[in-house]
Length: 460
Image (tube, rainbow, N blue to C red; front, side):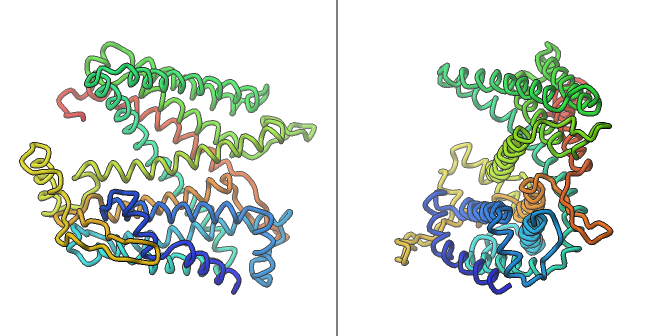
């Protein structure tokens, strides 16, 4: 285990120091502490993803078996269970780190709270604590880690998918409304062309993916797969037709095919990912069916992994940016939120300049470091935090659980009666994705019909 300790601590010390990370965030993010800290945690999450993928390589699996002196050893085909369990351990440590941070940041309302300095600073100590948790996770018994992956990570991943669903619907509306507003304001048809391209491109990709799913997973005799594909197609058509109906357009003028296309392609992706996650089945002759050839299956798994990772980082980035642009969004109750709202309103009305949102009492705070000139990020949260620290970390908790499932292709590790570890697929994982795909379409459909069903409610 000493090899793991030295490797992780050395990598952390070499790659990130408090000054290096702060300099990077300050330069890239406009030198505000609220944005710089979010970028810092996102970089930590990227490190988690990189380490997780590394653990699945043959080199890492062999090293884990050698340096653990048999503690992590399991009898499994080609040692593949070692990599899967290593991913579980790394993501477990990351989830635990953000759980601790979430509990510690409960009801932090402004940077005047001393805990805000822990959120926005002390990066070297936080990175070392995170590395220590990863090292400690490798001392956990294999049985505990298997149970965590099956009974904690999988439900947590399902919760994060639901978070993605809500964010996707919100993003679809925001994206289309923004492009339309720019088109009307600047009279530039390029914005309209981009919106039309995204709309038709999403529908074309969804159609192509549906055809491929029928060819690879919907062969005769694969009724369940055929049902999943067909039902998703029907729901996508219904939501698209709804979005273009005159009654819907009158009640919700900003709705349309643009949002429906984005929801459609995401729901189609979830179905494809679910089919890849399903255990392979055999016919009466012992021949695999309802699955594509092995070469195509490997390519499909890689594609779903890349797309899933992209959606994960986009969801994390969008949730953080959305919190920054809406002062009351995800904000714990308290006077700080009211002060922030009034300050934002004053800036928007022109009563105060935009610089009033920033607090910089010391005009010359820069000093030299081995990494260059360092200027601490401007404290823009003196009146109130720009986002809920606690909820921010809770999102990273379930995101880490989702990452564990994503990197391992939703594989589960089980022990047979002969103490043999088996890595396999799970119908539970497939159903999580299928139901999530249905939910994203249902949630979007509800946003269309809700203003008609409940006209007295304010829908914004």
